[in-house]
Length: 204
Image 1 (cartoon, rainbow, N blue to C red):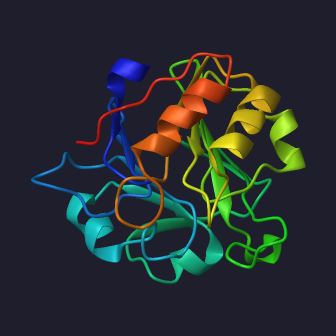
Image 2 (tube, rainbow, N blue to C red):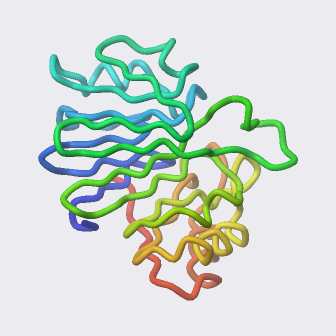
């Protein structure tokens, strides 16, 4: 699975297929491959970029987004709320909660999303912009993509605790290093605090 996963900076990933799946594409470089599926966790500019979505969309691309992000996007857009599911071809997509606790940036009522994507028998959890929340204890996955930058999301310490709740085979830190919040040092600290396997990807 990891050999097909590309970190595109910040909270943006591409999972090569087929099918080709993007998570929160933003500030894409060069000529990225066309998407079969685009997942948008919420409406903030660094996660929902209509320009980037349009760049990688084709006539058969399916976009899955929360209600507010969907309002900004054109094309074949499916709206999901936390707890809902959809299937695109052989790919199962489950929307799970993503929210802050005691901070205003991502309120629970905003219906911001994380995603659990099942493809080829493996499960990838993209946490979105979230704190460590109780719902994480019910998540089962092979790969967990977890924010570590702090301020708007979990910091490295909370992310290590979240990873311990989830117990993925591999945890991958994100949401740092793009000038919004967080640095490589946050990813390294996360790796030092979590006793499971952590892979720090290089941004492409």
